[in-house]
Length: 208
Image 1 (spheres, one colour):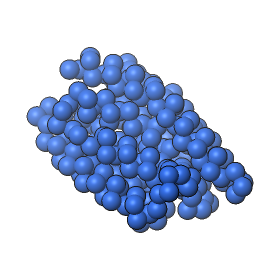
Image 2 (image 1 turned 90 degrees about the horizontal axis):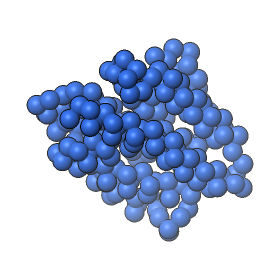
Image 3 (image 1 turned 120 degrees about the vertical axis):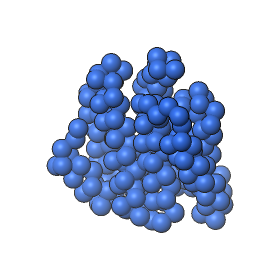
C-alpha cells in the first residue's frame, strides 16, 4: 500500500496543475487501468459500459488537444451517456451472484473512471484526484486479492511512479507544445495499460 506521504505527493501535484494539465493527468491515470474493465465486459456480458466510457475519455482528450472541431457542448452528451452506463454497470456488478476479485477490480476501475469524467464536468480537483488514487487502488486490491500470484506490490509502485512522472511533465509544460505533450502522455498511458489487459485476461480465465 502507498503511504500517506506518497498520496500527498499526488495531491500536491494535482493542486499545482492548471485545468488542462489536470484533465490530461486524470485521463491518463484511468486510461492506464481501463483494460481491466474492457476484459471484464468481454467476459461478463452484463457489463456494457466500457465502450461508452472509452469514447468519453477519448472525446475529452481530443477536445483538450483541439482536435476534430470538438467543443465542450459536443463532448458533454458523450460524457453523460458514459456516466449513465458506468452507473448501471456498477449496480450490475454489485448484483452479481458471485462477487470475486474480478468484480472488485472492475468496481475500482468503474469508480475511478466515473470520478475522472465527473471531474471534467465539474472542473473539480478533488474528483480528479479521486480518479488518480482510484486507479492506484486497482493495483492495491489486486495485490491483496492474489497474494502476488497475478501481480505484485511492485505493480503498484510502478503505477505510482508513472503518475508522478506525468505530474512532473505536466507541471513544467510549455504552452507552445502543450497539445503535443498531452498527446504523448495519452498514448503512453494506453501502452502502459497492456499489463492490465494481459493480467485481467489471465485472472478471468483462472477464476472463471
